[in-house]
Amino acid sequence: METVNTLAMLAGAASACRRCERVRPGSAVMGPGNGRPGARWLFVGEAPGRKGAGRTGIPFSGDESGRRFELLLDAAGLLRDEVFITNAVLCLPLDGSGRNRKPSGGELRACTALLAATLDLVGPATVVALGATALSALDAIEPHGLRLRDAVGRRVAWRGRLLAPLYHPSRQAELHRPWEHQLADWRALTRE
Ligand code: SF4
Image 1: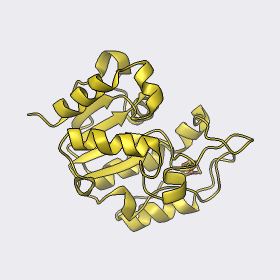
Image 2: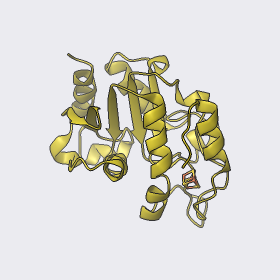
Image 3: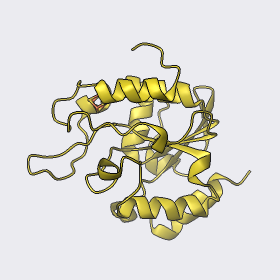
Image 4: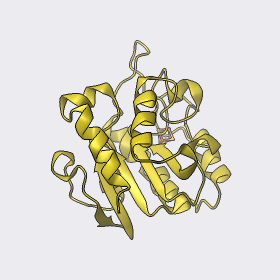
């Protein structure tokens, strides 16, 4: 992929991309609503959701995961203006009935170059992986060998910056990490 020097170039490349056949064409969520290059914090989720970013064009907004993300961001003492938010897969993955589905391995691999370009463009001090899918997508850019359940809450050196694995803000993640623990993880994220 060509070097991407501006957010507009990145958004254009994502919008024009048709590498994946089973996502909604042209639905890539990438642009000013994701944040600004130069943000110190880069959050990586899984994929846009049908009722959330797939509708609003802004990551983690408009649905329950977005509402929970806002609560967790607030617990960390961060504002949207201070962070950049993206996803491991930029386009909306839907099943045959039009419902959200997990992105496939092929889709994750196809979107790796755009995720790497986002990292290079934003240049954050800390990359926060929200969930196992995001952690796996980052491992494809440069292996870190981390597993979410072992590494949650840690900050490790990775690719010249820090990598912090946390659970995804969706309600389902509470099966693995109770909400109070997640709030504590996010509060610790910004503690020096
Ligand atoms: S998910 Fe990523 S690789 Fe696939 S079509 Fe969308 S932008 Fe391209």
